[in-house]
Length: 495
View 1 (cartoon, rainbow, N blue to C red):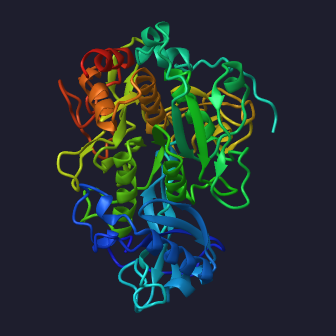
View 2: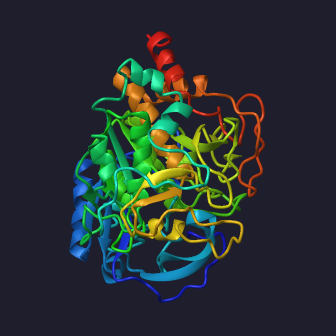
View 3: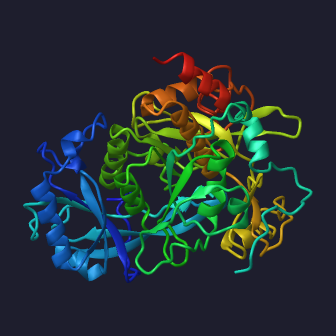
């Protein structure tokens, strides 16, 4: 079940539903019954079992969109899921925190019926010899055509520019000066899309062809603009990296295939995999993670165990499973004001995980703005996209949140959040891997944590109220990433 209480189910179900099928685990324990997240290896599927599971799914009418060593993602009509599971697809509403720090009623989907254990499982439906669970995608949100100019407009609001201000404040310039730019390191980014923009061409950044996960969507479009804008943060820190974008959004730009995007990106074996999105649940939680959360957490853990550096946004006031997975670098936020002083961003989440012993969100921090709108980084977006329009207008729900000073169709907008911090940290990881290709995810994390600039002022989002203090804390983790110091660490401290 995806809600701690029994939801009121309705019939508002889309024509296409996105989900995940867990093939039977070779260790004998289903993913849904994992008692810890120490390793994903016991939940790998045997090859023939995985193939049978895919055949059952295809026979029911589902399309396999991506696969891993544990299972695979699927897309199809509600009727196809109902044929596979002997249940039915129903909807229910949950109030949760979404993009731009707003709280909305969000539609969730579930598989219900007499033979459904919670939201998962095939019961005694056909396919149970190869399938141990079927889960539906949980709604996720970004942690926030005319040609656009390569240079941003002039606005009066205090803000940071890319790449210069971000590179300076994260102390990446010294590394760039000695030729360490993350050249050729593959950085995968799962988001709303990646649209062409003159900013990337003007800087000669290496942007690969976008992989679109939702059938019928264009790999050259980004209706929201989130993925396009936030990807610029990678290059501010690692200008020589190669970006591999994965569009997980539907035609409206909603992240309907985030899990599919992650699984597909993982299968392509990048060195770094960054994700600027997540869900939102009650905090403190009323119980352990849901079964669907455990399934996805194991997919994330499997990526780390394959040697991929995985970065997730820590959240903009959200509480969600992804940044809590052991081995993940959870991105928090630090605000550098006009005077250069550092303080914790009150726009970002900060807490000790109630589910994972010893895990604190965030691990380290990037540069993020402040409440109410975190309009802080001038980022390139597709002209006229949702972010371009929204940020150019005052927020009707926040009278003290003015427009950002850009035009609604100029291809530039002021925004940030941990959506920006995650690709900044991913860029830092890419730079370290460019200098030392053999580094493990644990070694990259250690270098960033051991050398981060300590931040001792400010608090995290009011939902958590964690206060920054000397040393590691729940507001900023180890502090603001210091790229050149981390580079020196991996070049001199690790054999």
